[in-house]
Structures are given as structure tokens and as C-alpha cells.
Length: 213
Image 1 (cartoon, rainbow, N blue to C red):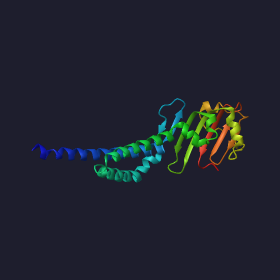
Image 2 (cartoon, rainbow, N blue to C red):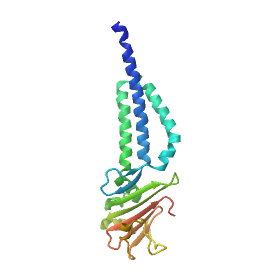
Image 3 (tube, helix red, strand yellow):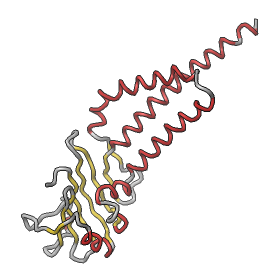
Image 4 (cartoon, helix red, strand yellow):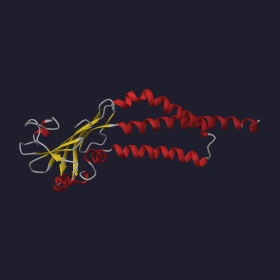
């Protein structure tokens, strides 16, 4: 009798393992999507500066059914996969999430916002980044910059100097950031980025928008 009943717990274990793997797959895809769309509300030293993007919530109507189908297929095929594949697939999901987290970190976002040539010469003090319900992304921030920052900026053909249309122009509105601005600051702009370099060359206020002409 023990011999006949042995396959029953084993089959149940496989079904449970498949369902568990399906749930892990669904959670992994959701986490990957969240970090790929995440916003920032970062001040230097923050350990978890991430904010949920508007389109992550709205996008659930489109992506959750798709992720559900992928998770169901994964759960269905799990017991048919060889042992090596059962290890490789979760490992691949972990790598996918790790890459999304890496790309969402403030240092990586700064490189994306101001470009790889300027980022090595800047230290982010504050970054606020969000989306516009699918219409694009915007970001404001304060950078502590090295002398090489402005030199790299002058060498970059994508930037040009400009005079703002009003004297009290600043790219962010907090009192601390306004206190950094003077009438002798230097302004640069590119297709999507506006920079205000302080008179002493130590600070930069930036405004990124996908709609800056």
C-alpha cells in the first residue's frame, strides 16, 4: 500500500511547486516593471528614494493579464522542465530584477539625465523625477559640481548658453535652492535639459523635460 500511495504526495508536491513558481514569476515581472518605471524623490543619503510612477498603476490594466498568462504557462511547464532549467529560469528573473534596480538608482538616473560626459564631474544633492501620465518624463535637481563639469559642458556640442526670460529664473522652487542662485549665474540648455551654473562654479540646478524645445 505504501508503494501505491507514494506517487500521490510526489504529484501533489510537483503541483504545489509549479503554482509557487508561477506566483514567483508573476511577482518578479511586477517588480521588474515597477523598477523600470519608478520615479525618484531623492536627497543625498536617502536609502530608498523611489516613488511609484503613475503609469505603473495605469499600466496594470494592460500588463497584469499578460504577466498572468506568462506566469500560468511557467507554472504549467515547470514540472516538465529539466532540473537545470528550473534553476536557470529563476536565476534569469533575479538578474532581470537586479538590472532594473541598478538602472533605477540615483547615480544611474543622473547619468541618463545629464549625460555620461557630465555625470562623472557631478554629485547629486537632490533629484526629483516623475512621469507625466505617459506624456514624457521630467526631473529637477541640485548638483555639487567639480571645475571639470563646466569645462566638459563647454566642449559638448549639444549645449548652448542662453538668457532666461525672467531674472528670478530657477529650475526648482525650494528656498534652499533659490538661495544658490545669483544674477551672475550661467545658463546652458540642450534639447531636453536646462542647467544653471552658480557664480562660484560649485553648484548646478537642472531641469530635465522631454518637452523642452
